[in-house]
Length: 418
Ligand code: CAA
Image 1: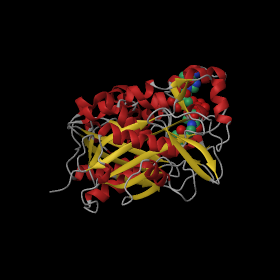
Image 2 (image 1 turned 45 degrees about the horizontal axis):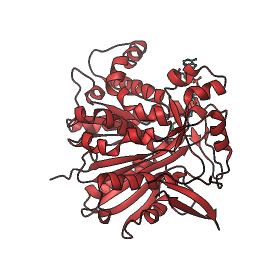
Image 3 (image 1 turned 45 degrees about the vertical axis):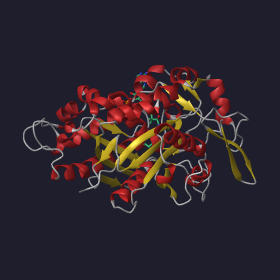
Image 4 (image 1 turned 30 degrees about the horizontal axis):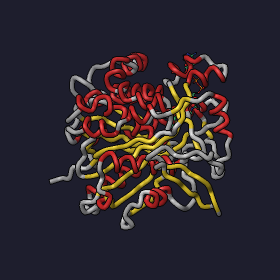
């Protein structure tokens, strides 16, 4: 019998501070509606150098193990997907292994391809288990990033930070993946990048949106071809994309999910056989349907709108937000997921929500995680943004979280809140 493999549980870590997005708009002399309805943001996570990619990753993994009672001796692989690592050589995963005292027998490594890096890790872990190479062991995949464009840039309201840790196993209580049906699309483009040595990303914002949409089209069509072959979806009264109960997208800012959904529907409308809206304008109108967006996408965006972009973790925040809100209703239903990483790479895949999704998500206590944050002023946010990356504030970590304490002899030293 084919193995069931996928995500058994997840945990989320967020920075301890955030700004209200309307405060940021007012400070920048921008109509707040541009950031709220134009971009879909409400709040934005703010980090200081002590809350780096390692600290957030270790906090998320420790929380996953503690909340879900993971037997650490069963972990055979630990992967960190990130595009904001802290060393050209030493992986974030090795720090997490040491900080959490995880088994020395594990395979550890980082995966990088902009925001797609986490999905690359998830697929490596899933296929490792599905192939039998894992021999009954489980994997932890952590997506951890700090999105940083800089003060007074167009990307500023789309910053954020955090981490999502995923437990991948043969007991996919959250999501059993349709292994082997993924659609992929890659193109060599400069839409968003961060040359070595730079702390802030460079981005050709509007072009990056077009690259995302073009790559989505390729990936979705690739998945759809296989899903049609396997009878997961059909050309029938409804379009294939409409037969997915929900679709979670990579969310660099919430409005992007709406654009992505319109594009996915356009792919179906353009490829549909038989009568349909004939002109490009008519297809565009049907693709934009708010009813479809509200039914299939809107409920996944609660966490993204309060945290901001978390690069590799953004898609998994959307999945977490969706299952937190609708885990019980979605049990046994198939959903779609679209991962996008600039540079670029998109992957569309699907999976079936598990019967225990709601129970697993209750243990993740996402409301509690957000409620423990502190709202800060724009002056405080700007002060934190200006701190050099090697100068963490002398601040005790909250219980159960990790912080970078200092860098000594080029080595990073972390402390755990007791
Ligand atoms: N009231 C309501 N809405 C308003 C408004 C107002 N007063 N003023 C403007 N808007 C709307 C605009 O109409 C626009 O909406 P549409 O796109 O639906 O037309 C929206 O607000 C944004 O306005 P602009 O396009 O004028 O905004 P901008 O030029 O300042 O920048 C951005 C927007 C390009 C997304 C910029 O924030 C950016 O560069 N962000 C980072 C790059 C990014 O996230 N790219 C996404 C694809 S790449 C990717 O996904 C990888 C990744 O994670 C980075």
